[in-house]
Image 1 (cartoon, rainbow over the protein chains, first blue to last red):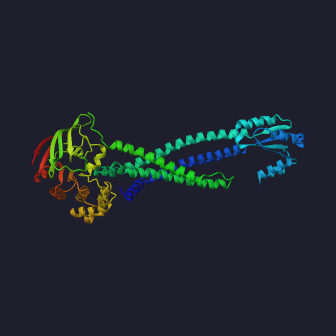
Image 2 (cartoon, rainbow over the protein chains, first blue to last red):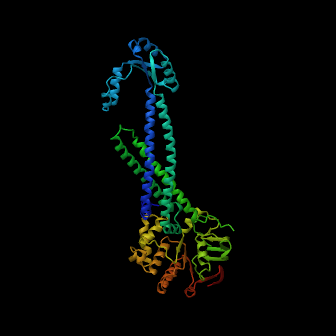
Image 3 (tube, rainbow over the protein chains, first blue to last red):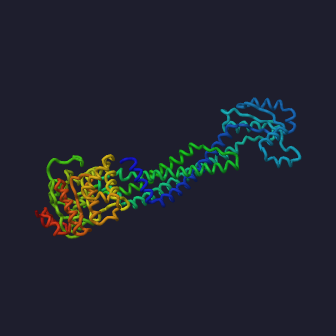
Length: 294
Length: 231
């Protein structure tokens, strides 16, 4: 069948049931948009966890006395396995760094009469040695050193982030399943409606000797286009949401090509599956494949 | 033999002991044996419910018999795989009492639809449609929609759609059932002309006068059995 004729027939199919096509496309867009948001959250959280893991820096807070003669302590810490650098951060420097980190939100710091931050050691761990067990071991050894009042490695936060990431991935899988089933069902219903609306054309095509593929292709193309359109609109909506969000909070990561490919590809795939299922029922209903059983 | 090949000789239609039951035991056709040779014009005569439509449906492989042998255009339809059915139907022109024209397409588009759906060479379509519409006197109606035509003209358009594929066999199911006597004569003359040019025609009708006055072979069905075969 000529491609232009196929497209024309597909256009007729869509035009015949344009109401349900638009409605189904809108529902599909919402489904895929929801999935995109979750994928985006997962991507950003995953990047955050990776960055936190790469940092591999411990804070050992010191007593005032230890900070006055830190030389021996610095030597003992530097001698630990996996340590690449150690530096003393006096309270004033810690406050300056904190102020720089906060940026413009320093209103609360202005209300402070004294510097509450203690002196500390910043202990950098070699990236290849920064496993959870190794960091926990270094943390334990630092805590036992005289003059060290408290050690903070951020392990709890990273562990919490990892737990949140795992939960988010599980939610992604659940949403992917729900969205996939929903989109397949929507396309299935729309193509079924189109098949009913074009039953006379199908009958005539069959009677004049059109092949199975010639009868099925316009409906298959309809499902694919519907899925693809849903995916494209979902990506556009996600892009718009991202633009709105970045104006309010620090810019989250937005992997545009990957997300566009995911939305469009998944929409296309699910559209094809939905229309194939609908067409399968059409074939089963129409052809006496074998001599009837007696 | 593939469904596209034409046997050099032999019958176009051959039924041996064909029976078809609906609902398990209601006999629509019982023990039908019939041979139609190349170039024949055959009337299938019978009242409503006699089995004419059931027989035609078997001939274009819309249905299968419960028992018996059935060959059309050299193909054993009972053994024919589903993928070969389109090839068979491309060689058969089917005409219905209710025309089965697409109402949202012009007469030209109805014919084009039948050709495009069967992988006809696109550059030959316009010429083939023009030729067949001229032959049936429908050129001036080519851009009309079916509902803008009379019943007779719609049936002519339906015949045009069947003929535009240059079929070896025409199966017409009560083609004059929905039209006035004058238009019926026109339709019959067109089918006779088609037959005169070598195409085998099988026409089902309940109109005994029409069938007998044509002086062609006439097979009469009653309650699913052949009760006479004359001419």
